[in-house]
Length: 156
Image 1 (tube, rainbow, N blue to C red):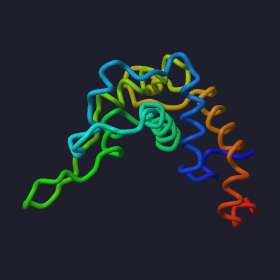
Image 2 (image 1 turned 90 degrees about the vertical axis):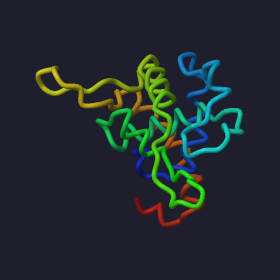
Image 3 (image 1 turned 120 degrees about the vertical axis):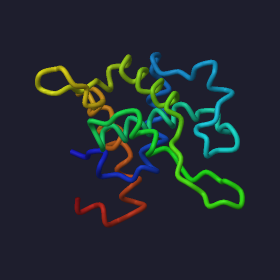
Image 4 (image 1 turned 30 degrees about the horizontal axis):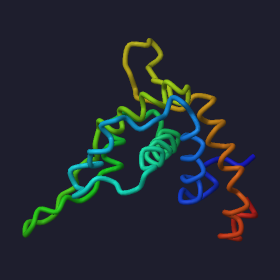
């Protein structure tokens, strides 16, 4: 069976974003029309479906790096901030966007909070069985596109 580790992210993201857009729990909030995705950006996103794409990217990152928290995810979605004549510095992405996306993914049943064995310390968020299944189904769907783009994938 093909997993989401086997296909490139650039082929997986658009199909996964379309699947997430069909879910009722995942929708762009009203305030999302007026925000930047981080302090390192100059303008807000120009794509109409940027919330769905970001949701798909967060779901994939949670699957790759689980258990992972909001702060680590915001660092993954960050970038270099232009400081004029001073050297650029790394800045994190918007934690509010990532937190909102994770709450919507939890509501959809794709992500859950992971705790230690005693249940006293929150380790971060990880995929549920439904989230793993969705990622693997989409990966299986785009596998022929990946094999045509990179013929070396057929041996895997």
